[in-house]
Length: 95
Image 1 (cartoon, rainbow, N blue to C red):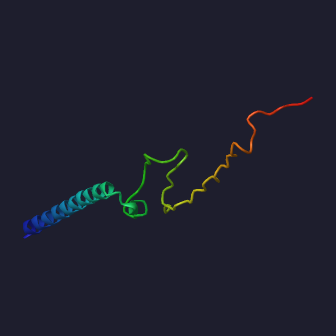
Image 2 (image 1 turned 90 degrees about the horizontal axis):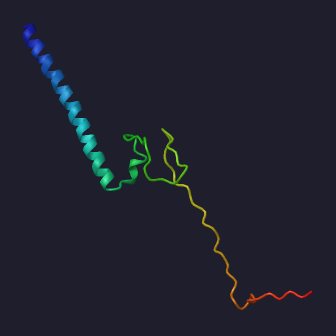
Image 3 (image 1 turned 180 degrees about the vertical axis):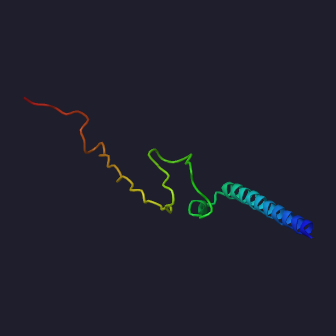
């Protein structure tokens, strides 16, 4: 009787180990697919952790456990170039 219980326990534990392995494999495959599809929810997903940023502006850092936010970029005002009619080509200096 104890041998049957032992084998049942071995089968159950083996099934749990196989289930955990399948779950890990599935999560890796899903992650690869999401990366290929450029899924923007990867940054905010609770199931993913960002450890390294490969393509970001200089000075960017990864702050763990903080939701990502988009920061608006201020654009420089357009530069006004005076027309050639307003500025003389040569400036004469009189003493």
